[in-house]
Image (cartoon, rainbow, N blue to C red; front, side):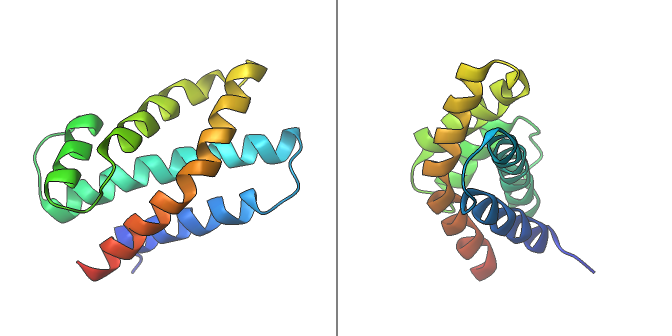
Length: 119
């Protein structure tokens, strides 16, 4: 059976693979989609592991920081914001902004996968 942690790790690997490709419009859009999966599965997996009752992503991010799953709370809160604007990828400027953020976000999602694995 695939666990939440396995699903998150798979999403991170897929993001890494997409970012390793030569960038074009299609790869950029793929990166954005895979980034969305990482953000969603990150907070949802954290929610499940911590057993928290809240459903608000930003509150769960704060709990992840309090429980030392993540170190850079501001970056993760920004990731939630970027994920929220990613649906506007028809706007080229926003798509480029989300792509650039996803590129810088990869190491943080990889670190969270490692922390999840240890819990």
